[in-house]
Length: 282
Image (cartoon, rainbow, N blue to C red; front, side, top):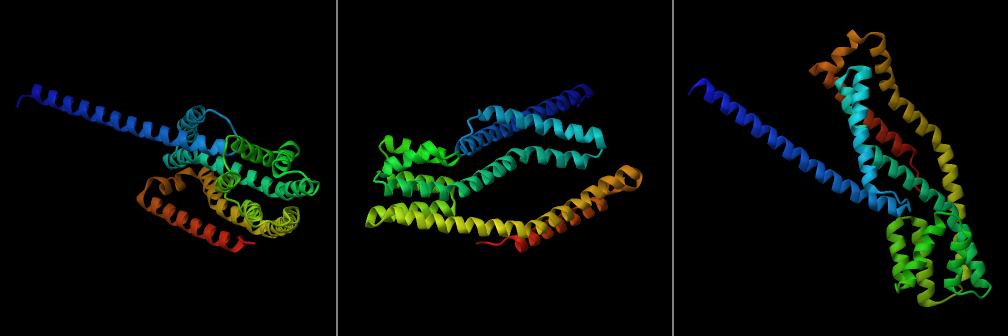
């Protein structure tokens, strides 16, 4: 085999490998875009945030590309750049989780007042439809948004029980489960619905007060866990700035990677146990 033939074979293999890599990267990109936009569409619509999921995906891709480059230019450490890439990829889902948690907390606070509003309307002789309309008109978001969706589903011909069940599955909150159960049972077996709603509102208000006290008492433990978890990261960064030659083997050698893996596992275990200690179910 001549040298010219060998060069042609090597070039052909390199071209085939490059095309295969492009095909794989394109497939991963298409799958990532489809799954991301679908998850973003569902999550944002559940929170009544109407933003184009494709725009959010393009923003996420920009953060995923730019953030590691900035970190690598600032530190010169490939490990930090990889961590920044992982953070950039997970940032939208973390943001949605925080937004969903805050929205549920607001709904938990608003629900007792909304049930008292419904109980007052029912006691005055209004129908269930009028009571729900009153909550939509007077209650703030997100409670007015959820009940407005409930009424729109009923106007489209969906039964009240099915609409309530859909809201229960969408929100996945214990307070909503109790509310839906109260309305469903009262409709099936009868009874004084206004009195049931008033008692349930009082119970949920006491539950929210107790949960607030528990959050206040356990906030110190949570803050200590965050500080202890971030302390090794800040300490490693400070030592790297002070003496980069001494810290560089930690990020460039196998033994250093092993130490980082052990530290990472220990931090995860510490965070897990601290979370178990400070998490109290009511």
